[in-house]
Amino acid sequence: MSAAGCRSTACRVMLAFAFLLSACARSSLTGSPDTPCPYGNMTLIPEGWFTMGEDDGRPSNQPQHRVYLDAYCIDKLEVTQHAFSEFLDETGYQAVGWPETLTDANSGLPATGVTWRDAQAYCQWADLRLPSEAEWEKAARGSDGRRYPWGDDWDVQKANTLESGTGSPLPVGSFPPGASPYGILDMCGNAAEWVSDYFDPAYYSASPDHNPAGPTLVLDHGLRGGSFAGPADQSTTFFRDSSHSAQPNPRAGFRCASTIQK
Image (cartoon, rainbow, N blue to C red):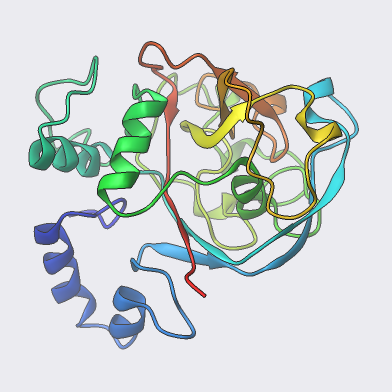
């Protein structure tokens, strides 16, 4: 059983048993003053400033600016098909276009083909939420303004993008060398990821510098990170994309985040 996106009671119990066999079990599962994340497969992103956006590429990526975020937690891996299917089975939620059956062969793949509302519903069921666009970018980029999660130079061996030639998603966590500074995986390629924000191409010119939550005008929803079908220059840590989310998007998946209670 994969730990990625495991949220149900039964799944957490089984994971708890497995983690108890390791020395770090208690803190990784339940949280503590040192690890306040609610699930062991989440990573704490510390409070502080980071560089957001870039002064090249699409105008919507500009201008580069400094942003301060409170500490938060975010999934280390994209939510899997197995985890999303558990959500559907337990709640009876109807996800348009989702396959009725799940095989062992695809259970570890990211849950793609979901709308923004589907992703939001899953996160709410898990007592979590979608990350903001700023939270997503800091988790992918760190505080040093890097172009890709692993650094400034492109490496086809570290991400599943158009250049990889796979033509489809791969199991989550397939590229450990492509981890972000915080150890977050698949922030470049594989599945494009929904964020909580609405998308406004001019938002950076007026966004606040503390905990920006996105524009209030309801337009498209934001997508970040590129996908298996997108080129490297659309899979950078700062590239902004969007989708109407009226129909399932075959390249879009998601991961969850959590606010740290003060």
